[in-house]
Image 1: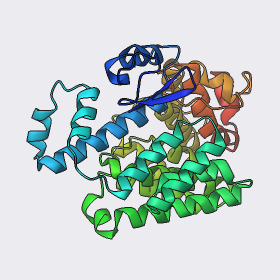
Image 2 (image 1 turned 180 degrees about the vertical axis):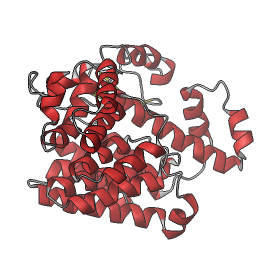
Image 3 (image 1 turned 45 degrees about the vertical axis):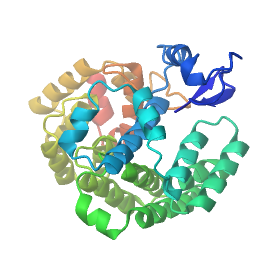
Image 4 (image 1 turned 180 degrees about the horizontal axis):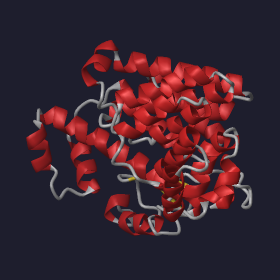
Length: 339
């Protein structure tokens, strides 16, 4: 693990501590700096998830090296701290594959504030191992000047992910793609590709990729079902929407509730008691959504990366996905305003 200190210095656990004590960072100020970084004011959920993903990759390598079963693995890591896992991984002494070395460089690049340094590290990683989906995602963000150029990068990310994982991996692990850390870069690439296709008007192809994400990862850790549902409402594919809501019938969150209200409105009209009852449930779940959908509260330039239930951030994320579906449904916004 590497930690950014004072937004400038990035230190590994075995580097000399920045305080000048002469000790390794992990023996000196690491715990104090980590505590400061993870306060509520500074907490970055994206960086935290990425750090956890790195830790999971290390756990997988340790288990592979020790030839552990799932039962052995669960027992072995009970009560383990992330530092213990890092130490175990470093002390394992197993040679790191080019893929592991390159992917760790990509994780480091994701945390860099300098675009030039990030691109340089990505290009270096690609020379070590060329099949890095995350590398092409970063290059899309850093080098593409048009949506079309970004789309080409995302296509290369998909190609890289397919070559990295291999055909047999897809056959053996369908349905578990997010649970296996090695396939997460590919799943990220699928989302970016689908969004780029949608933005460029290739809507049917985009929907196909969203559906494929749910096929590969029906647990839907990425929240694809909410995006896909909004897209299907735009396309007026009500059967598709109902199929998704049936598959995830245990979901009663804000996105599900508002999308279901719009679905029932499309099917039965503004006089439907079922539709009105569902809309009232949705409003109870998040009071901020109507103001954003109706344009009474302006959308921010940047969409939040995380949210809590019932929050303004959740309303912004939902509106960003579903506003077009509401606007293109005749009478839907007037119906919402009445409630």
